[in-house]
Structures are given as C-alpha cells and as structure tokens.
Length: 229
Image 1 (cartoon, rainbow, N blue to C red):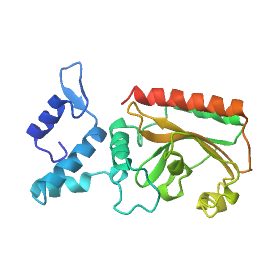
Image 2: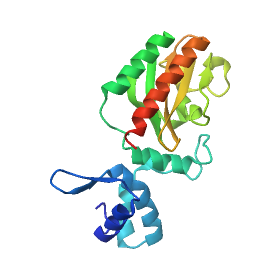
Image 3: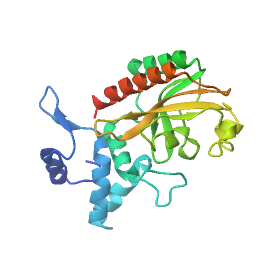
Image 4: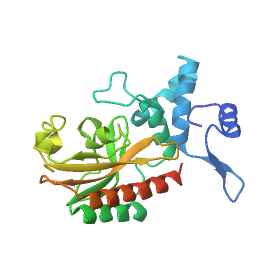
C-alpha cells in the first residue's frame, strides 16, 4: 500500500487513524488522500531506509507545507493541509451540489465570476467555477489564501487600491479582478479548507443582505464538506 507495510496499514485502520469502509464484498477500503499525512510521518520516522525511498516520491506536494512559504499562513497550516488531504476533494470531478451554490452566489452578488476554491500548499484549485476558464492558479496569487486566514469573510472592494493585491497577476492581467468577496468553507474540525467566493472586474460594494446570503451559501458548502470528512 503506497510502499507501507500491510501490518502498518492494518494498524492505522484498526486504530481509527484513517477512515475506512467495507464494500458489499467485505473488502476494507480507504481514501488514498487520507493516507498521505500518515505516510509522511511514517517516512520521517523511518529515516532514509528502503521503505522511505520508495514512499517519498509518492507524497503529494499539495499537502506538504514549504519550509519557507512565499505566502502568509496560519499557525495551524500544517494541520489544515492534513485535513484537506483527508477530505479527498482535490482534483475530483465537478458536482452539481457545489455548482448550484456557485451559480446562486454569482446571482446574489451580481458578479460574472464565482468559485468554490480549495487551497493547497502550492495552488488554489476550483471545485466549482463560473466565469473562469482555468481550474486552478498558484497559491501565491490566491485571494482565497488570504481569506482562509480568518473566520470572517474577506471583502476587497477594489483590488487596485489594496496593497496586498495591486500587483497580483490576476489583477494586472486576466481576469483583471477588482472586486473579491470570499467566505471560508470549513470541515467538521473547523479547518478552513477554502472558500466560496464571488469576483468582478469592476469595483463593487455588497449590501448587508447580500453578505448574509453569501455567508449562508458558504455554510451550506461547509455542511456538504463535513458529510465527506
């Protein structure tokens, strides 16, 4: 199993360290994403032996915090990344439940762009998107990387006037973001895995009613994430 001894994997499953389920045929199954954080710890404990050499190349860079990250992180970033890995959401197919939420968010805010983003160590990946042709951008460019630093929504009325974003490639180039409002999406342990956000290429203000509705949509997105974690 990804270079880990079967006895080790069995211990992890029986101890509840990784979630598992039984198929109708009685076979035990686990999510690969749930294994990665434990494998990383296992590799460190094993040192430079043959097992660590076989496992190390398979570790996902998405879930390993850089030693000196080129972006701001919260004190619990390492644990947040482990929670994101355990969610199994990264690089999964589009789902109607999330697409409905981004569509509603776009309609409520009257913006041409809306996203449900998940923020890894190296990129922000879009589980659902409206108005953007790409499915991810580098973490260093991510407005959502700033939004997950706080429980409160991040509202940027005019990115050009905000020193954090004025030189951002997503502001100076396509899609020329000027307005951003991001609402954290959390798992059952309250780790902020990403956001539900709306964007515009014009400066904008949202009413208190719009902000409340968007907050409720983010709560619904969080509840859906919690069902999977």
